[in-house]
Structure formats: C-alpha cells, structure tokens
Image (cartoon, rainbow, N blue to C red; front, side, top):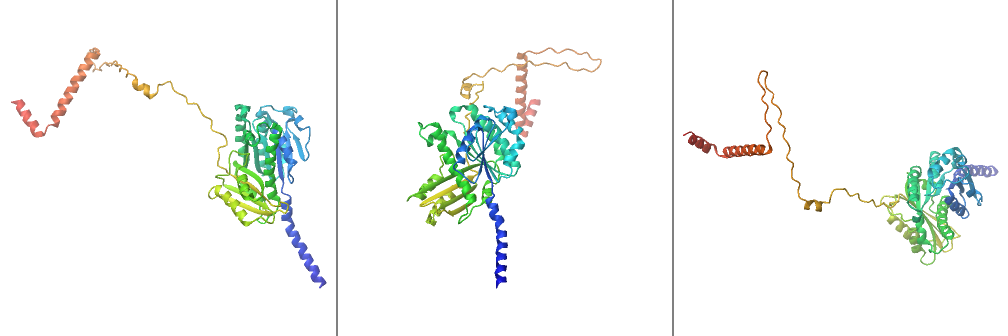
Length: 427
C-alpha cells in the first residue's frame, strides 16, 4: 500500500514537471513599453504608476529630461556623442543619427522582449527621428512591435505635421500595428479652460486603461481564455492601423454603456469599421450574464470586416462587483490616416473653352511653295522654272479640280449612254 502511495506521488510530481513549463512560459512573457523623446517620456512616467507586469523605459538624448527618474521607469540616454547631452530641436535627422550611433546599446534594451510597445510624440526631433530606428532594431530581433503615436496640434504649424508624416512612413515598415492619437482630440474630451497639464494627464489616463486592459488579458486566465498566441495572430502582418480601447461600466444599463464607450474611444478619429482582425475580452463578476456577452459580441461583430479574424474571451474577476470591463483590439482599420491636402489647380495660360469660342479663327497663312529644279539628262540644257505667285497657283488648283469633277461625272454615267455621247461627239 505504501509503495502504491509512493508511486502515485512520483506520477503527480512528473505531471507537475510537465505542466510547469507552460505556466512558466505564460509568466515570463515580457512586455516592454518604451517612450522615445521628451513628450513620450512624460506619458510613460504617468502610465508606469498605473500599470504593472510590464517594463517601462524612457529614452532621450536630452540628459536634463532624464534627471528626475520616475518610479518603475528605466532611463536610457543615447546619442551623447552626437547631441552632447542636449535635445535635437526640430531636426529628426539628428535624432535618427543619434539612435544609429547607439544601435548596440538599444539592442540590449529591446532584446528578450515578446512585445515592444513604442510611444512617441511625432513632429519633433528625437521621437520622429529615433523611433523608426528603435522599431527597426526590435523587428530584427524578432519582437512583436506595436506603436502608439500622437500627432501635433494644428496650431503647431505645417512643418511639424510634415515631420510627423515622414516619420510615420518609416515607422510603418517595422511595426505590426500602430495607433494614432490626434492632439486636437483633447478639445473634445476636456473643457477648453482646463489647464494643459491636467488635460494631457486625462489623455494619459485613458491610454493607461487601454494598455492595462491589453496586458491584463495576456496574463489573466479566463473562462474563455485569450493568450499571447492570440495577440500574435491579431498583430500578424505589418503596418496596420489599430484601435485599442478598454472601458468599465456599471449600473442597470451597463451593457449599452459598455457597447457605446468601447466602440467610440475619444482618443481616435476612427473606429473598428472594416477591421480585418478583432480581439476582445469581457470581464465581470460571477453575475456576468450570457445575454450581456451576446449583446456586446454582436455589436462588435457587426462593425468588423466580412471574413475578419475574430477572437474573444470571457473572464471572471471577483473584484469587479456589479461592473464589467471590455477590452477591444482591432487591426487593419479602414481609415485615412492623414486628411488629403487640397491641391491648388494650376491653370494654364490658355483661355478656357468658353472664351476660345468667342475668338475669331485666325486666317490661314499662305505657305510659300518652293519649286525644285528639274533634273535633266546629260547634254540637255536645264531651263530654270519661274516661281509662280499665289494667284497663279490658285487658278491652277481650280482648273485641276474642275477637270476632276468632269471625269467623275463621266464615269458615273452608265456605259451605254457614255458610248452614245462619244459617237455623237465624233460625228
């Protein structure tokens, strides 16, 4: 009996050893969030205080911007030989050179990550110039890359927007997906009299909740589970426009509130319409009803592209008393990233058709006809021909035309009548 008990314990230990690698693999999934440039460094500093289970880094060329290390954020200064510890102004080419200079050091930070999330405020020097190099290095390491970028305010001028466009064009080549936040959206979220610092903090809060939802569904097991392999499936491909949002709702109308809020994030000027990959998770307490899951799922399904890959999960969290949380990630969203510039029509010097009709047609110029010298046989005198004036040429042309008309009339006459006419002429 004792031997059987010992054998059973050995079998259970072996089973435990077989199961543990999968559990360990789930635990060791590494997510790194890297803010590149001063603006993104501020975002990362605020998000890091709200989220766990991810590594945060603030990367910049400006040593002064990295003087106050926020809790839980690793500081990374690069390009010291290029900028000498200063910023790059509005020179993205300087930020790019600085990142290339420290390529090997950047590689050490990004190495070993399963998912790299890059944040940058496009339109400046460091973020716009260095972010594409960070993304390129990460891609070469085999990491999954997701970018979250902000676009300049309209009052910052066309130059900054042009820098942002060029940078995004380079970034897309090395990202699986990216989300765009227009700074102008802040006026739709916060009252205009709100202090700028508080307004930006509110945006960071919404962004932190969205990223927190994504990280939570990776690590937290559910009734219908979503794992990192599902995240990789949705991110598969390159340069896709992505929509990421996570909301919490409670009360009697929590289902309708959840649907409305998760599908209409104040951060983006686009939604999930036309998305080719959709992943969402519904988390609630033990009272989460099947009908609620059905209504939320149906609303999301209807906006997706026909034939889109859809992955969903349901998880239970005892801490969400009377509340539900919906996290939604969609990639391949059908939207114009930048508004098309209205190109000014270049009018030609030629007058429009209406004016052309009013103009009198110009008289045709009479071309001078050159009469070439006739080539004669040897021994025969070559008598030069006199050049004819325009009046003489006109008369000759009229006579030739008259002869041609007479010939046409003759051949149009039936053969019998032509014979009679010829005989009458002979008589």
